Amino acid sequence: MREKGWTYDIYLDPNQDFQHAMGFQNPPCTYIIDGTGKIVYIHNSYLEGDEKHLHEALLKAAGKK
Amino acid sequence: MKRILLAFILLGSSAFYAGAQILNGEGQFHGSIEIDAQQYRPDSLIGAPPVPQKMLMNTYDELDYTNGKISAGVRYEAYDDALEGYSPLYDGSGFPYKYISYKQDNMEVTVGNFYEQFGSGMILRSYWSPALGIDNSFNGIRVKYNPVKGVYLKGLVGNQRDYWTQGAGLVRAFDGELNLNEMDSAWNNMKTKIIVGGSFVSEYQAADDATYNFPENVGASAGRLSIINGGFSFYTEDAYIINDPNAINGDIFKPGNGVLIRTGYSQKGFSLLLSGERVDNMSFKSDRTATANDLAINYLPEMPRDETYQLAAFYPYATQPNGEQGFDAEVKYKLPRGSFLGGKYGTDLDAEYSAVRSLDTISENDKTSSDMGYNTKILNIGQTNYFQEITFEIQHKFSPDFRLIAQYDYEYYDKTIIQNEYAPNIISNVGVLDGYYSISSAHTLHMELQGLQTQQDQGNWAFGLVEYNFGPDWFLGVLDEYNYGNTIPDMRIHYFTVTGGYTHNALRITVGYGKQRAGILCIGGVCREIPAADGFTLSITNSF
Image 1 (cartoon, one colour):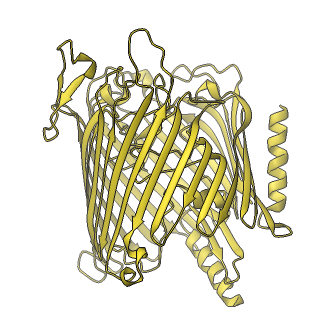
Image 2 (cartoon, rainbow over the protein chains, first blue to last red; image 1 turned 90 degrees about the vertical axis):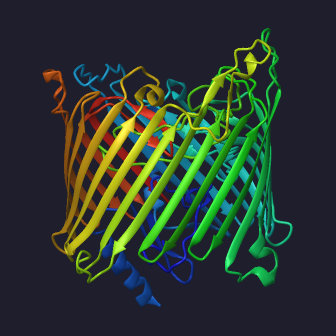
């Protein structure tokens, strides 16, 4: 994390409790949760190029607020 | 057939609820579905055996309900019949996982099935990995209690899942962890973060053997320490098992001991991680007659990393619970943006070395101590090399649209020890080129070229992959794995596969058709054999 220069918080899920609560079996799975706690975007799996759509979804979610 | 229908009804209803939450007062339902189906056509050339059922399927469906402090859930599994490579003991269906849990401010109680891990897992870890066919959940009671700030206590009692029944051994376990920085507000913002923990596990199994005086209670303990200070991190764990004669160690009464150390330094653009472990007679199961991956109470640390590239993962390492000592070092460095070698976007460099050796053991031949099996000296290094790997990787972005990864991998692999079948040691060299090209804002092209060179086993292999991402929802790919270097000309086979898929929110559907080489899948040092296959594959996952 430090080597990459990422400054946001990362939480570890050593007993897979969070994975179980969210219900996905195969990471990666991306969720965007807005300020009210509602899940506004879900995307299972990752293929190159998905980050552009994630960026659009983030802008949309932020724009709402 | 009924089970397949049930699975599709559940899939249909989950698709209906996908993305939404059902509100019932304050309560919420959520859940997940996974269906993996495969068609099997006999193909003697690749070693795909005839499968009378022609198609096999694994299904896992879970439904959970949460309402305030209470949550409950159930998982349905059906193996109609179990996919090749999974134990036929799974054939059938049922509800192997169910629980009710009550959680309030500083306490949580779970009754039913649950998963748990103490520290790194060296004396206790239960988890669910459908890819490996592992589910060693506990069935009993677990209490988590947080009496004061920074103190975390856990206690559990239960038997472990064993396919559709339970292990004979009853496990009782306790874990305490102190997070020093949380304990006193004066330490909250201290730069040094310290966590200390200790665990104790006892397993009871009745013994009624004419030859051996098996201990009915087997005790194990472990202590751990974690220190983080800015970019420095240090973690160590030491575990001890009193005496556990079992099928894995040949019924010896020698105590078991395991040590793990992980330490590192990282800053922006650079990191160094060093790991070392020593494991001596550390197989710990809740049935002394259990074998393979069944009924494991603990999980041993893995030194070599899990490889993701197809040919680099050809010869994966499996942790040896009876005895091994390992070392791993990884360095990462980012050549800065704008520098001569870094280029406009920077270049990532990664180098890793890992090695695992046997312990230095002396057999106990004296009659009075032969039931101890062997003796070892802690600081000595064993004579046999089990595994060695050196990896170099460079990642460089040439333009906003094009990125390339190049990897070289050298490996030494003791196949006799690791795969438990007599074979020469394997020395291999693997090269990988992995490129990503953005065609447009929505579409991406992904191409891989790999080569494996070895003079042993099946000889040289080549691998090629082309995958097109019609973002964000669709992808289509073709891949070929070609054993061009096999000494037997008839065995120079192309394992050609076409694959495609659709992703929407949490739903993912993947379809494939082609030949699959026999291989081994390893995750964290725990492995499952994947037999050769020829035919269609279908995988559907969804959560709601």
